[in-house]
Each structure stands twice: as structure tokens, then as C-alpha cells.
Image 1: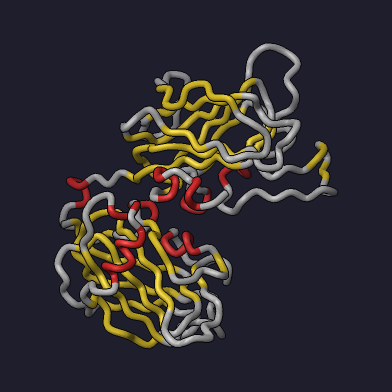
Image 2 (image 1 turned 90 degrees about the horizontal axis):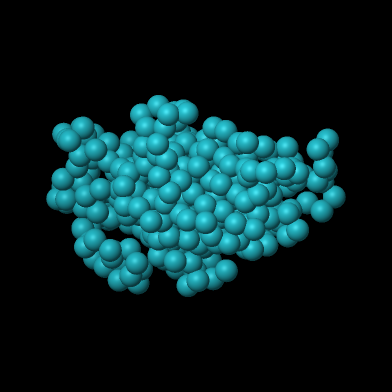
Length: 332
């Protein structure tokens, strides 16, 4: 599927059901063939023709057994963080004769975990599904939710569930406090980049340190003049006070140096990628070009005052890998 076929709510939002950000499957009525937690994996689903386990064919996703009576199956997912849900991708990749014919989704907002008394609200009505395909579907709610419940009718397999939305930041609770404005848990997301040949560029904004050299943003070896870059939309407009660049596991391929530009863009500009990229070339310098080391957390506290910003452009010279970026600041 080309980028133009992916709806804006999926291109410019955080996957609140990302296991890498901390989402967890809490319950499934049945996951006999494939454990429900696989459905939240960040990587695309894979298929191994000759892989079997004690329960039968190994599938990359959530799969229940064939139902032989009334009812249907469902799974409960705790989102990585509370947020407004804009839409979904119910992906049935590699499920061809065993996909659910239909699905619907409910959501709730609870401080702990849902129980028998929890009130659930339908945010996606009963919708038909097809074999081995992405199903991009819009949410019918603009409220903040903490959990979703995926119903499949009557049974079958879902390779991946993506819940696209905007993490909720409690402005009153965070007033005057230093937060990571770029964190995926706070709504930070990648808008554009020059190259992302290796790794998983979205993991640049994930919590914790990188697990290995594939857990971050890495470009191919540059064979022409210039440098590589990546543009990040912050989760909220803020005043930056400190920057962290982590080159965890990048030892023979870390960038020689890096700089950061920062700017303020109007709401909704992320959908106009070309405009953001062009504007970024003229943003003021937040961090001057600074030397980097292998496998190291670099903390830069002496950053230039730029005023309130909504986006940053990380330049690396000439190429290489960055595991994590932290943009510490206060809400503006």
C-alpha cells in the first residue's frame, strides 16, 4: 500500500496500541491458535509457511479457535497512554481462510483496569473485514480513552490492531514541569526524513534505551555531499531547555556530529509534508553542530533560546544512527 492510500489520521498520529510504547493486551476470550499480545507488535506481520506449534499453524497475530456455538470473541487492550482516538487499522495480513468477517470496537476511560462494572462506548460500529488486508477505519469519538475492546464476529485472526490518535497531555498537571516534548507517549511523531534505510525510525521517540542496532533511526552510508536529517513534530508547543541524543548500540556507524533546528508551525501543517520540510531549512538553531560518541547518551543543557516551538529538525553529519531523541522543555 502506497503512502497516498493511507488516510491522514494514520499518517500523522501516534499508534496508541503500540506494544513498543507500552500498550498491553489484558484479556481475550480465546487465543488458542495465536497469543493476543502479538496483535500489538510494531513490526509488520510475517508469515512462515512451514512453522507450526503444539496448537497448529503458527500465525503472527491474534487468532481464536473455530467457534462451535453461539457468541463471538473479543480482546481488551490497555493503550500505551490515554488519548483521543482518530481511527484504526484492523490488519488481517496473512489471514486468508481464517479472518473474521466483521469487527467492532468499544472504548472506556478508567483510572485502573476495566471490570464487570465498566461502561464501554462503541466508537466503531460493526464493520465488514476482508482477507489479508489493511482496514483503515475512522473513530466515531473525540473523547479521551484509556482502553479499547476489539470484538470479532464470530472468531478468527487479526494480525495487527493499530489505534491511531493523540496522547492526552494534562496541561494543568504539567504546567511549569519539564517533560519530553518529543516522546511518542506525549504525542511526538516523525513528519519527514531524508533517509531511513535501516532500523525503525519511529522508535526514535519510544521510551527507554534502544534494545539493539535495529531499534532506532539509521541511514544508509552517504555517498554524495550533504547530510541526513529527520523532522519531528512535538507533542505540544513548548519552550526547549535541554536535549538528549542517544547513540545506544551505534558503534561503528554513529554520526560524527549533529545539530538541531527548531520552529513553530500552524496546527494541521503536518499533512503538508513538503511545506514543513521547506520551512525547516530556515528555522533558528536550537543546538549548534556538536560532536557525538559511540554508544553514548549525550546531554546538551546549553541550548539556544528560540521561543515556543512545535517542530524540530535533527541534522546528522554526514549519516549514521541515532537510537533515541529527548527534547526536554515546558509547555508554552
